[in-house]
Length: 291
Image (cartoon, rainbow, N blue to C red; front, side, top):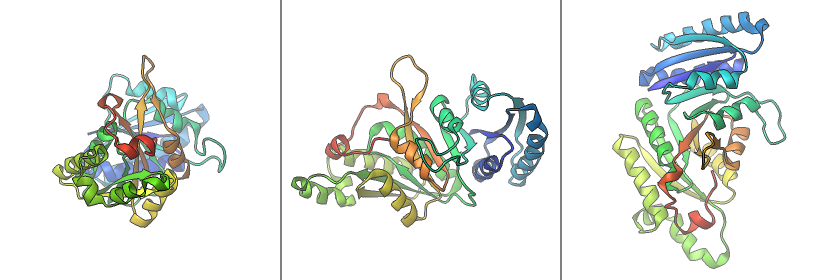
């Protein structure tokens, strides 16, 4: 695994290095630490922060490749990733406002949409990564995100919960709701949603990852955070998909944006493959979450 950690010397960057150390140590990832100062006056404080962050990585047996640059963080990080294969990019995600469309630094959202590699937004202090929850949407094209999560979980000895949230349907579909609330029955069914979730569960278990499936009904973001609180999860995984056509950027859906806004734990925005087709069933088509 190739890991890129981005730092601007602020406390949020310390969180990025901290959560990255929990991944890089057990996975023995080849790790790059990229320090970026937007102004010449920030160079010295950045240099001191990088010394401390390098020491933290070394304490878990990781010897990072270190670079310092000056300029716009988004442009510099994008330049660093060109022609290089990074499996994961870790960035700090400090909160800048409690209202509006973007609650955190807009540069973080820009990175999520611009970079080809998955982005892990380090939110708050993270001392362990033992339980992951994946917002699957029940779709086939989220499977690359599921597999990335599985590889991380296998390396870290973490468990994974596959979460699918469906909006409350009209009363006339109550019988279908009852069927889909029974996880075992759903996974054994011939429905497309059941087949998707079963396939994802089996692929994770083949990696040796303890995996469970959770179904919820209600408002997607509300139910995601209920699951996080009740399940005691350390990391939430959500998706983004590449824009169709010639443009080289990703769509960060409303659910992903709102999770990033409200989260108090690390958020992994993984890439989904829209060419895999939509294998979602009745509820995925009509009531499924849009990630």
